[in-house]
Image (cartoon, rainbow, N blue to C red):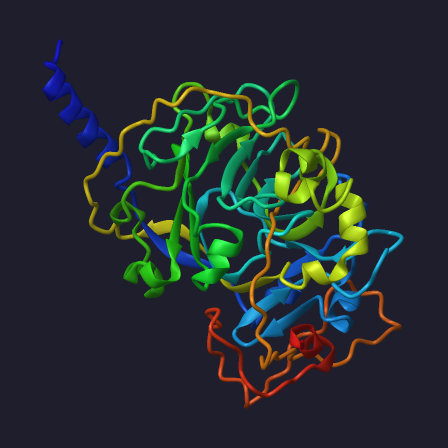
Length: 420
């Protein structure tokens, strides 16, 4: 049956809207200051992306103030005091102990590493036996990058479309395969507030990732525009409008076959296969030092703002009553395809994945209050996770939104990170 052009367009809109009318979401897992540091493992192996970094265990991270509970959030930072560290700059990479297949992942992030030359921060998910079980890079970048890049990595054979995405988002490659000439299917965003310095200037916001058998979609909501259904823990993606990035499998990528059993990761590395290799392509960074490693090694003070503050990560699974669906359709951008930024992710035999970041600095809370909530670690223990947080009646659990910290300093090792 032939349709007129106008009727066909209307039918396409209706069909697309119907595709997002699914069962409602119910809260499955919450990570926040009550359990985060005990629910994630600290990765301590050499960086698979060949970064100039030394990932430390949980006890070291707690003792040195690299991973602690702050006022209402989880602080994860890097060493910004040591000059010329022989094994790379100390940092943390944490991986959730629990794995997930499909779901709605909502991360409230108050601060991320700024757009700082040499850094490569990432919030991402990946499955075991990479790239067989896939990878989803939700928030990632390098050096002076100002806008987020959202990328999928799979074994060969997965070709995605981007139907329904924001028109301003540029699809750099449709081939998600992680071998050969491809480094995944990447969508480059155009929002200066969704990454690095711009993100921190607005107090961060929420990244929501919907992973279904049909699509993987990512929305970014600035802190001032977080939907009420998210804050009320009754999320309804069908009412959010066009996502920042959307990957649709269709007939060319069976999402259930290529993505499964993902763990959640936060990390910050330096240089390596992405930030290091594109050092000379960034004029701002190239003017600072002959190599990325030389700059990161010799200028520790530049990385004081290379830290995360995560208020919470909440994972929802389908099972509730579906919410009302807002019928919308976004045009599919027709920008030409170009080769994506080569991130050189780990080889298939490795079971770990990459991370990115970018330049600039963010004002530090100088009179800030950090609550560690942890007893002094026992040097004799071999545990990779910090002890559970103790209760403290002076901590009111208020979420930090970039506007300041509680005034009572709880941990001197961390508090000095915010001193002039």
